[in-house]
Length: 476
Ligand code: ACM
Ligand code: ZN
Image 1 (cartoon, rainbow, N blue to C red):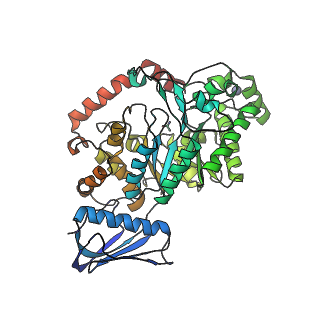
Image 2: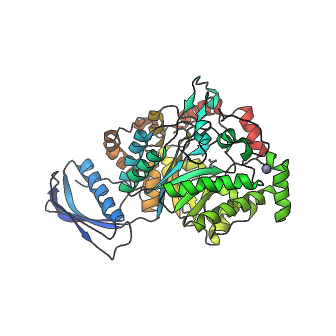
Image 3: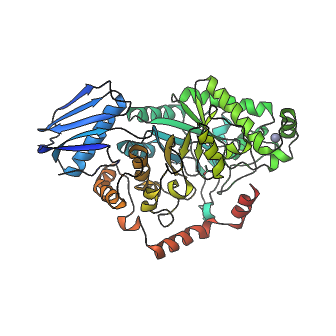
């Protein structure tokens, strides 16, 4: 039998025989220094398996491919030689632990599944308006106050119960180690200067007004941003990042930079004085300079900052400063950044945001997206925000199998194969998700027809597009 695999390998050559893959069949692994990082060859002949790679990651991916072959072929497969390597070095998935919090056991299930499809970056969204989810020793109120909200009313649904939770340093270490064993780098996101209400709730001096606030209970974009004109507030951020850098051994730290309302900066003496001191003409530049400063601080610690595309608006960031993650933008800014040699991570809202129902972003639409259309990106990433995710099952059903589309683009490029063949591969690999206790929607709901799509999208937005949210979006 010839296996369906996800992502599609670069080259598969069938050599004529058939092998029975017993559980105890010999697997030999040899060093192949000529192969690039993450690349491998996998040879199955006469019931023997031979792997060659130059890195731990390459050998790991060969094993993941072998596991898929076993799962799909049930132990008997055509002899073959696979020569494989990824197209992109960054193949990520984002989990938002702030809006709805799930613990380490659930995360490990997601990480296990992602690793099997050769994703290699876990972007962990750990701070936001609705919750601060990581222990910081120097500032204990971040979790004592910022990790708790008394209710949740996302999409107009009153949950009527408090929501709380955060990861201790020990748990963070546990997840980092779990990922490392699966060749996944963890990229923490400490979102700033916007999406900062939970931090301001813990330490009111961080905001421009000094007022006392609570973590937010609804979705949206909120005014309680970091006061970037206050040296003490900026030092706070650096202290937090010092602890973050110690906890996360990877190269990248995400520093947010999205959806930052300007209202408080406009009326803040400190922020206005900072703008005058720097000779800046607008608040986009104020954000750009702030992000550049934080990125430079991280650079001195051997880290590279990633920021959402909004931070490009002030024209303050050069390709040496940051990596930019594109989700929704004024296209020219990202294009110019890339043309100047900047690295982009492609997370297009309309294709790679999996918090929206399949009616809005069907599997085939996610798969049809070409992240290479303007330029070759540095990476691709699928995002799972959790405002509207109230159970872990729902989270899984939203993320899978649509995340496979991202895994395939990042590893195999575009185009790789027809949507029909891709869907057949997804169906063949569904038992793998089931074994990992990852529930999915029934396949009939992955690609709804036009009427069902309209209905699903309407139902979803009925609760979501509140007048308040539209007002906030207009005010950005
Ligand atoms: C984002 O969705 N605000 C990055
Ligand atoms: Zn201020």
